[in-house]
Amino acid sequence: MTTPAPTPDLACDDLLPDDPARRAHPVPLVLLHGFPLDRTVNREVARQVAGVRRVLNVDLPGFGESPAVGAFSIPDLARHVRHFLMRKGALPCVLGGLSMGGYVALAYHRLFRADLRGLVLIDTKAEADTPEAKANRDRMIDIANREGSAAIARLMLPRMMAPAHSTPGHPLVQRLMEVMSACPAETVAVALAAMRDRDDYLQDLLTTDLPVLVVTGEHDVITPPSLGEQTAARCRRGRFARIDGAGHMAPLERPEAVAGAIRSFLADVH
Ligand code: MLT
Image (tube, rainbow, N blue to C red; front, side):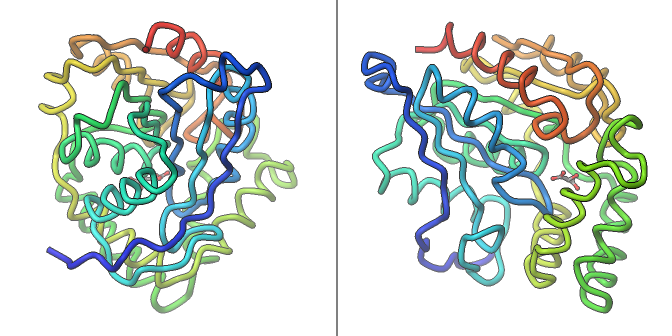
């Protein structure tokens, strides 16, 4: 277990609805990005949901424009997010996470359930890494340390988006490559170890009394839609949305469809 450093001020888009009645809604949506990414991948979804709720779109420590905190575990990231949200007066909230951000959201739920009014799990899963996945994390850590973030980005890119968005020269390929390559290699290595060592959160998710929205891209090969749909069906208050034409980066690939699913979920979450 690591000893978390004090929480720095995290970079965040804090977006408010124009309509004063909606602005006053006491339960904002918080969005956490995936690995090795930053809040720009969720930015369009955040902007579109901010028509109906306050949205805080956060850079996790060490990612994007947020300062690094040294070594961290997935629960450490959840603790940092909580300190930050307390400072921002953003609790209780609906907590949403894309892929690694979903792992952080699930760790947050285990630690601080009382802060939450709902969970939005996007292109992610509750299960821990398999032994094969853990061995692959070790290989990736070695590559990050020896060759840097661009090498990790090149390895990951082909599996990140739907075939239609993965063609050479596609603007989304370029954008994702830039974001992934900009992630500091130290953060990449620490995050890989944190994901490798994360707990299994499936039982927590299946037994929670919170409303849960599971969102998965139709062509997501990392966390397939069949898994998302089954998980949502097993949750006590689960709902599933498949995002047609998207892969593992649904918020980047089809932001309007992801925002639509979240907006309709939020209409029932108070
Ligand atoms: C992510 O997009 O955050 C990663 O695919 C998560 C993972 O590697 O498990």
